[in-house]
Image 1 (tube, rainbow, N blue to C red):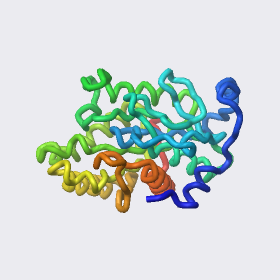
Image 2: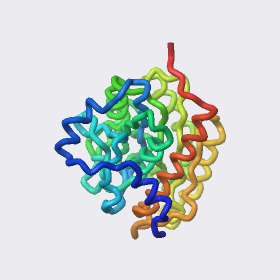
Image 3: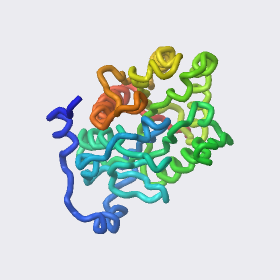
Image 4: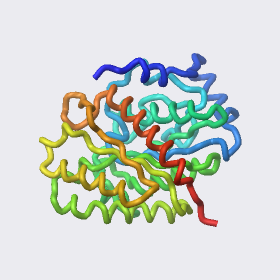
Length: 276
C-alpha cells in the first residue's frame, strides 16, 4: 500500500528545519502551560513500539509534538520513538501525534513511549518482570507517565497488543479480565477516574502464524463495546513488512490516522476525569 497524498500532507504540516542541537536547547522553553500540553500514553508490544523502516517522512519533526525520551526528558518527536529493542523503527505514534496537534493550534502534544516488543498482557501488571528485555513494563510505564504529568495533562491512551497472547486458547479466554484489571490498576496508580482509550486490532496477516489470532481480534472488538471510553481501530486493508507479524511503514502511518480519528471521536463524549 503506497502512502496517500493526504497522509503525506498531514504528516508534513508545520514541520521545522532547525537543527537538532538548537531543538534540544529550546524544547523546555517551548512547552506551554500544563493544561495546554496534552499527553498521550503509548502502550503495548512491538506493533505499538514500531518495527517499520524509518524513512525521511518519519524523521520530519513537528514544532508542537514532543516525546519523552529514554532519560525522561522532552524532545521533539521523530522515529524511532521507542527504545524497547534495537530493532525499534517507525510506528503509529508519530503520525497520531501530528494529527492531534494539527487539530488545535493552541496545544502541544507530548507522547509517552512505553511499549515493549514481545510483551504479553501478563507483563502489564505490577512486579511482572519481562525477562526478554529484563524490564518491568507496567512499573516503567507508570513512572514515565507520572514524570510526564509533572509538566502536562494526560488526555488519552493508545494501546496495541495481543500477538503474544494469540497462541493459546486459555490466554485469549482470560484476556478481557486481565485487560480490565490492568486498566483498573493504571487508573488507580495515576489517579484517574476515566480516560479516553483507543485499542487496535492485530494484523489480519498474522492469522496463519497464530492459531487463536482471529479469536484474539474478536476479544479486542468485544473490549471496545464494554466501555464508552474505549474506541476500536480496525486493521482492515493493512499490510505487513514481510514477516507476517509487523505492519509496514505505510500501514503504521495509516494506523496513526485511524487512531487519531477514533481518539478525537471518543474525547467528544468521554473527557478524562481525575480523582479529587
